[in-house]
Amino acid sequence: MTQSDQPRDAQSIGPRIVATGGFDTLYREGMKLVEEAAAYLDGDGRAASKLLERDASLLYASQSMQLT
Image 1 (cartoon, rainbow, N blue to C red):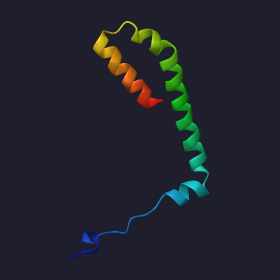
Image 2: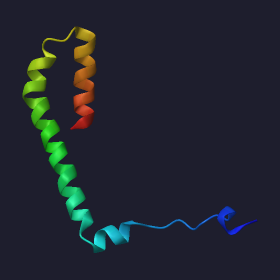
Image 3: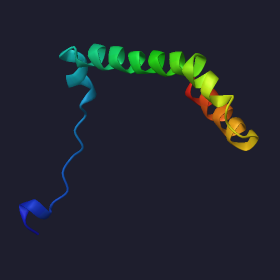
């Protein structure tokens, strides 16, 4: 077995992300996306969903609840 064939140990990136402040940036960006999705679902998305057929409207409502 050559060295390239040998399994490698898993490396945890969590501590490195936290130590460099990367987690804060990632968290803020993620929360911004959540807020934008919620704003769409409460505004334009709600208006657009009223134009959908019944089955599509139920699916839209179900998916929007899962997102928020």
